[in-house]
Image 1 (cartoon, rainbow, N blue to C red):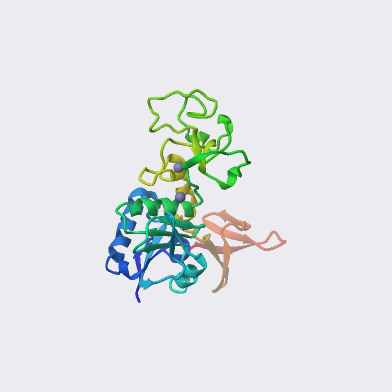
Image 2 (image 1 turned 135 degrees about the vertical axis):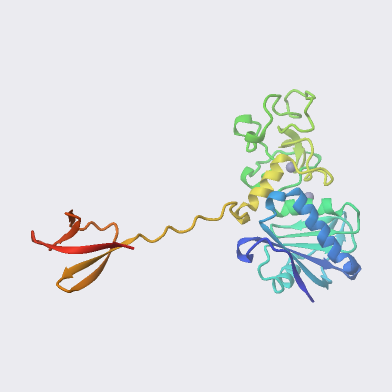
Length: 307
Ligand SMILES: [Zn+2]
Ligand SMILES: [Zn+2]
C-alpha cells in the first residue's frame, strides 16, 4: 500500500484534501495515470483553486461490496467507503473513487463522488459529480412541471424565482433581454448571444417547467459542456476558505522601543527600563536631562538612552 500526496498545496489542516482511490482490479494498471488526468483537468478548469486543494492517491485497490450498476448510475453504500479512506488519509475532505468497470457516475452528498473510468468522457462525468459534492443540483430536465416550493438557499444553480431584481444570480446576469430569457410566459426571443447569456432559462433540477437555470448549457445539464457561470462561481466559493491569501500576512508589529534612564548619583547610576509611550517628567536643560522626583520640585540629572 502506498499513499501519495500528489499535489501538495499546503498544510493539510488548511487545505481541501481531495483523496482519489481506485476500485476493482481492472483499474490497477491505469489508476496512477487516471489520477494524473483528473488532476490535470481539475487544475485546468479551476486554476484559481490550485493552491487550495491537496490531492492524494491511495495506491491500493479496494473492492467495495456495495458497488453495483443501477441504470446509468453507480450505486454504492457510502458507509462502506468513508471509513476505508479516512483510516488511510485522516485529513480527507472529499473522496473520488475511480471505478475500473461499470458506467456512469454518482455523487454521495458533500464529500464523495464515484465515477467509472471506462468511457473516454469519464473526466467530464467526474467534474459533474464533483459539482454535486459542492451542492450543485442537476440542470437537466424530464417532462414535468414543478409546482412545489423550492428551498432557494439549498439549491445554488436552479431557481423558481421569476423576479429579476431578487434573482440569486442577478449580479451575473447579462444586461437587457427578456426575463425569463427563454420559457415561462415571457417572450420566446432568440437572442444573438444566447450561448453565452446569463439569464433565466426554463428547465432544471429534473423539471422541464417551473424551474429555471442560469445559462443555456452547463456541465450540470450535459456533462460535456462547461460549467455555467453560476455553477463555476459556486464551486470556487465553496472552496474559498481553503485558498491561501495571495499576500503573506503582515509581520507582527515590532515591540515598542524602550528608554533606559540612568539615575546619576555620585559615581554610581541605576538603569530603569520604561516603555516608550510612558510619559516621564524628564526635562532638557543646557544639553542635560533632568528627572523630577515624584511629588517634589527636585530634579536629578539623568542619562537617557534609546534602545
Ligand atoms: Zn448529476
Ligand atoms: Zn450550471
